[in-house]
Image (cartoon, rainbow, N blue to C red; front, top):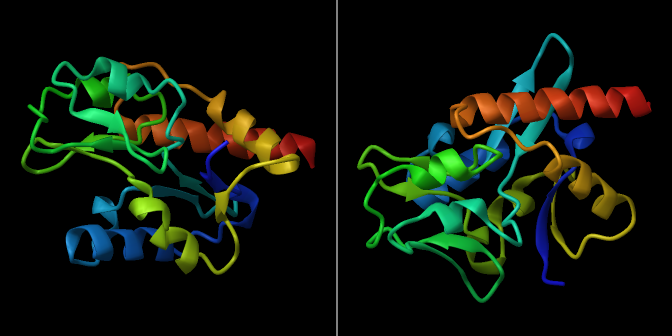
Amino acid sequence: MTAQLLAVPERCTGCMRCATVCSALKEGMFRPSRARLHVVNFPLEGFSAPGICFHCPKADCEKACPEKAISRDEHGAVVVDRSLCNGCGDCVAACPYGMIVLDDEAKAFKCDLCGGDPACVKECEFGALLYGKPEGDLLKARGLQMKQRMPGEMAPEEKRRNLAVNLMKALRSDG
């Protein structure tokens, strides 16, 4: 099994450092809305959840792309070749987690694991983001997160919010 990006929502403080470093690295500016991961904050509930791309073994976004612009790289990351992307948005609708979106140029963008060394993980002081081979409780948590698939007709933001709500409920019912 290759290394995977993992989210541990109960450790997330909602500080946005992960999204800030991601946008700085990928976009050359501090613009968390352009990050490849998304933190959903519920300040009144005292809960935050990092939304990450799971680089699904059978990636729906890859299957949906009519131009074959989405593939898997040598690190196991599902990546977008922007030169092949036609901006149709089929991949956006296909992703059940809302983790692939179109930019201002109508080109798909998503997490690429920073070439196997995710900057967001290094920036996360509280261990809410990990990169490695999941086992034990982390493997179980990843499975729980991946079961929270949302329908294609939802907007990516709505998918991410619903995923976070479901995780919050699940974590609070276990505690």
